[in-house]
Image (cartoon, rainbow, N blue to C red; front, side, top):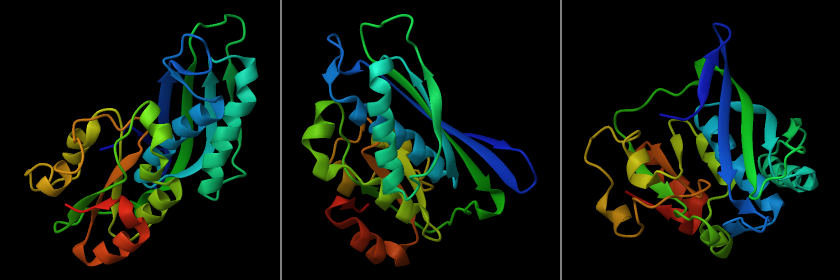
Length: 232
């Protein structure tokens, strides 16, 4: 399951629309988390693009709905470009709009990633597969303080492209909620994972993700992921 909207526009292709919102995060006095707007743009883009990639989409553009003010636009787009560059997509167009008539007391941002998908490339789920966690669930100030546990976008893209692998970003509803979308056994989150991380905790801007994979790929996935890998 994904939060992306999948719109078939021909027999072979679909349009993918993925989105993320953030509020109270930025540089305004009444923001709850104070971080540069480049960080806000980067992490909002991260959530939406992971959703897009997770359903087999190839991003083609990014749309920003900016309620942080005119002065924030350049930094927000710089953050988005940082994420695009990590994915090797630095030339994608960015468009959007800024609310400049009414100054808000808190920062707010809506972001959409528009993508395309070739339908025949959608992966069929395999009956026998394992599930692992990559990265750690972090939210708020933790995201900045524990960067070493944030799963890189480039790693996510690399694993999504592996044959037989299905990746699913973990957001505010936590690991346990997303696990049900991948777990065909119905047994719930493995004890090995639940003993190491809080499976109910918000993962904020998708700082971690779940991955379902054929067992024979485990060593390769471990090598790619390093210490971020927690097996099921």
